[in-house]
Every structure is written in structure tokens, then in C-alpha cells.
Length: 207
Image (cartoon, rainbow, N blue to C red; front, top):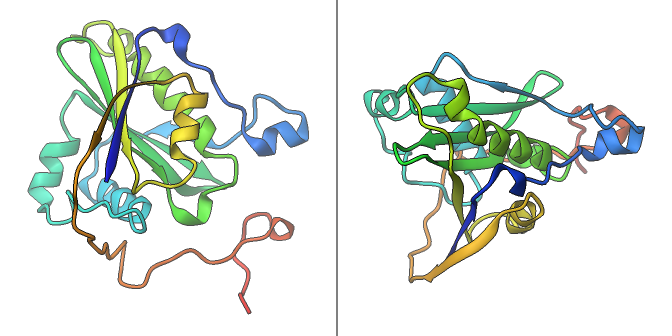
């Protein structure tokens, strides 16, 4: 497995995206609804984690108890930002601020059924923007000096391209052997239904 570490060292590094749907309609301001989950919820965070990571082998948090989830997501330095497509959660970003002024995008991704629909770019743009202004928005935090994340060869094929397009720069690469691990997703055999543009995002029956 190869792991890539990427960073921005100035808010000016961010290159925001416009959703594909908005661009096609000629409305640059329109896109997915992105909101902060201001009331931390272990249940909701676990749903997002399991659903987004179901096919890219996210496993490090699957065995955590409710109390461990509460400790992970209910800390003041952690924020969860969620993208909604017509009222349905489509993906999320989890931010964590450090005392040295760095903010890590700890988790980022889309539920499989919502990939390739112009949501990832706007969600990442919003997450990075909120990482950069976190110190200004939150009392007791220092101004953000650096935003960073890591991605790996287990992630989706468009993940790295999205990060680079938003202005991240590669600063470290690591390679290590890792066993293949199956992830159950939100439940065994979970997976996306096929979608088409004619039904405005509603599931349609497959052949």
C-alpha cells in the first residue's frame, strides 16, 4: 500500500470547485448542501464512516464502542462537515485542529452511490475553507497555519486528482505491505443502486 501526504500552507493555496451540476446549469453558486454537524453524534459519525469506507477498506474505527466514538467525535477540536444531495447524506469530511495551528482532514469521502456526481469537489473545497478559518470561528483556537491530509492506494481512483485540483501539494510518500481486509460496510452486502440522470438521482432497478 502506498500512502501520500499532502498539504496547503496558505489559505491562498485553495482552488475551489464548482459542482458539475451547477456548471451545466450555468449557476456557479449552486451545488450540494454542505453543513456542519454542530451536535456531535457517535451514531451519525459511525454511519458516515461505515458507508463511505465500505468499499475502500476503512477498518480502524469499526471495532470502536459507542463511548470510544463519543470520545473521538465530541471533542471541541473536531468538526464534521456533511454534504447532502436532495436531503440525503452523500459524504463527509472530519476535521481535527491541533494546538500548533495545523488542521488535519482526518476523513473525507463520498458514499459510493454519490460518487461521480459533482459532489466531491465542492465538499472538499468547503472542508478546506472551513479548516483554514477554524481558528477564527472557534474561541480558544489559534489561527490555522497548515491544512493537511493523507490518502492511499486503497482510496477511489479520483481521490488524488481531487486533492491536487484543490491546491494540495505532495510532501511525503510511504510504501508498506498490508494484508487485504474486507469491510462489511453499513451492513453485509451493502452497495449502491444504479442511478441515471432521468430520475433526478432516484434509484432505478437494474437488469
